[in-house]
Length: 455
Ligand SMILES: Nc1nc2c(ncn2[C@@H]2O[C@H](COP(=O)(O)OP(=O)(O)OP(=O)(O)O)[C@@H](O)[C@H]2O)c(=O)[nH]1
Ligand SMILES: [Mg+2]
Image (cartoon, rainbow, N blue to C red; front, top):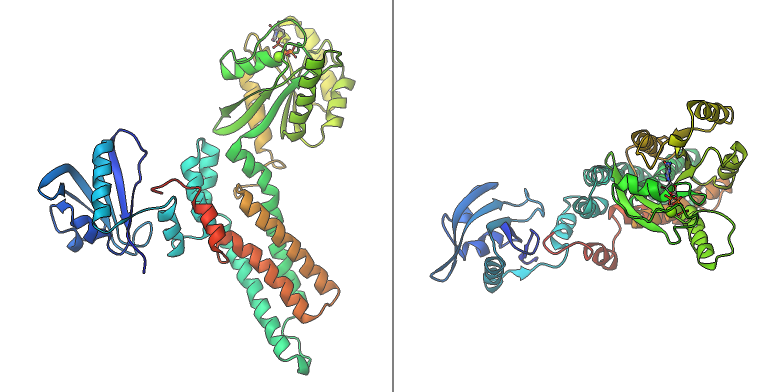
């Protein structure tokens, strides 16, 4: 038997209104005990009721109570939502009264946990609720909403069911081992496993993009000293974040902040200029630059067309094959039209795509932003609409992929039926971890404790 829980669902602190949520079998009765107005327990679901919250004879507040009857509520239980005036005193008082009348204070994420347990959605969808609340830009909002509404879980569940069918057929085969009949055509099993594995591989590949969407695309501004990296950073942020000077080697430490362009979040890093140096501090900065480049997925390589040759640029491409590079020719205000045209021609011959800017005069910045967005959205970086943003899902997918490869290997080597069945159970276990078809209290506790109270 579940109990009835209560918590403030709007942020702590003073607001115009605060919403207190009560969920559980006794939600309406408990609320009724402190409410003066219509009898809430006999009202229709999805209705609002004006009235007073009373502490015995004393009026605490004028409120509006919304009621949602099981199973048509967020938790699939009876739910009441009291909208009161947003004073800390009133909110605490109402919650205290509800606790006195038998409700229990909700744990972090307990409303969402109940929604999951009552089958409102699967685990991956429940987790997306937290992502949705945390999303602070268009792309992460889209990703979370897509996941909350089903995302990849539905397809994953269907494919898992197919695999489960095979597992039960294999069990049958074991029961009839004496008769030497195959209930499962290994070719059919193989087809299903390949289909599932292909889907899982796509999801695995989507993680770097999904993760970038959620936490910001790691983007490094690098180049030689005095190329104008810090000037560009300041221009992009419209703020003097980094020190700019004509002394080569000005930036020593990494300077990092988030920038949203066209709804996509970037983690932009300005770095120490790359060169040979005897200065210990500068050398440390250059080491940090290299570490940042190693972890980035996008590199904005800033250079001066007079000081770097095509061979230098090609060398940059050579040594940074793990990431996308945008070449940014800076300080074009210093050059003649002919010099620029000449450089464009050379770049074309070497198949290099270049954006020309003047970081100082703020010209070419929109073109650069467009180029950045186009690069992020280009097909080999992003993998379409569905992507994995959650580390836990990524780990389970990796394990599932490993198990599926083992099944394929097993079919190839015609291993014993019981071993094959065992591998299938493994794969199903890991996929079930994502959707919540397989859970344990520890996993659940871990996931929902990361939510805030009231969610
Ligand atoms: N004319 C012109 N000068 C620029 C431009 N961008 C930067 N500069 C100048 O170039 C010098 C170096 O700029 P920074 O932004 O400090 O260069 P940096 O790449 O960060 O240099 P380090 O931090 O030393 O590696 C400064 O004097 C800037 O004013 C530009 O577009 N045009
Ligand atoms: Mg600098």
